[in-house]
Amino acid sequence: MKSFINPMVTFFGVAMVSLVSAAASACPDYMKGEYRKLHSKDSVDICALMENKTVLVVNTASHCGFTSQFKELEALHKKYKDKGLVVVGFASDDFKQEDADEEKAAEICYLNYGVTFTMLSPTHVTGEKANTLFKALNAQSEEPKWNFNKYLVGKDGKVVEHFGSMTKPDSPKLAAAIEQLL
Image 1 (cartoon, rainbow, N blue to C red):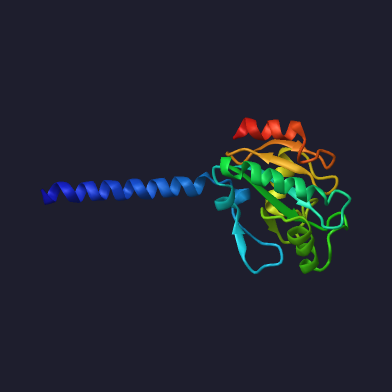
Image 2 (cartoon, rainbow, N blue to C red):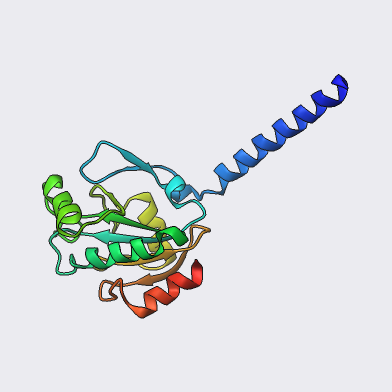
């Protein structure tokens, strides 16, 4: 009996290691890494956050004419989070409209608009200085021309559709695209 158990334990151990390795390698390279949360010392592992989820990635700025979209993004988050949608905001000053004081930017997001979805500290989203994730999103679709661009990313980590700043988060077209992926 002992000679039968040892090979079975070895087999299942190797199988588990293979599954863990496959899951780790399933995350695209451009999603590997951590980003610091807005006005926090805590970081977010993007692979873990986005793993097997439909994701709406948005470049944001706290002093933009589109800043009110935070309210609608929060509504999307609340409506679809239990169905597998993750909303992630990347604060950015690439268009010179993010508050220089991260605490004030956080107040605008969290207090003024009630944001509970993941918001990340300011980072570049355009050009050569763009963070790794945005470089990949931009290569797959288009680079943001302004704040509040929305990238709908499928469970495989690839951009399904890009929505510009003028597309509001409560747009029927955006909702239909999200629902199709969930």
